[in-house]
Length: 156
Image 1 (cartoon, rainbow, N blue to C red):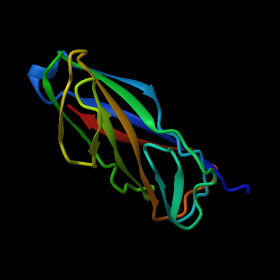
Image 2 (image 1 turned 180 degrees about the horizontal axis):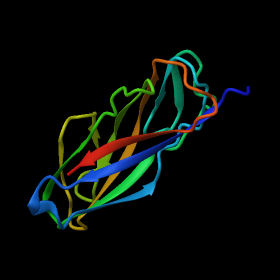
Image 3 (image 1 turned 135 degrees about the horizontal axis):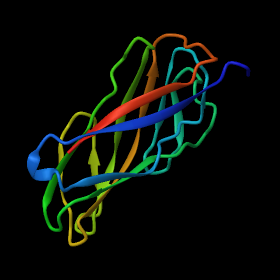
Image 4 (image 1 turned 180 degrees about the vertical axis):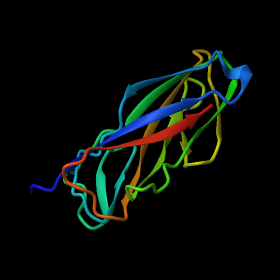
């Protein structure tokens, strides 16, 4: 197929609270949906298996992607709250709804959904691991010659 584009997902970091300025979020690996057919459709990535599932039309060409992986470093044994924000439809007709899993050495696994704060104990290491999958929705055909970068925010 000649009409293929690649999605690159970027993240932005916000520091909404002075008390959390010592926290640091480090990207370990970027989320990757692989090649996408630039037409109307929906593709979902399961965060644990990294399997890509076409929910509407066949826009994801690969059967497996790569979940995003971040480490949030904060004070040990503290309750830390973060929110992963939805990237709403913009002029390009693309939306990204992130969801995933967070864990630390004190908490084995907590699911999170977009735009909903999650509080998790940082454990004795002070490190929270965040794994992100999600859903890409395309409402308009996208030019196949363009590389679309989708950003999403992690607030903490």
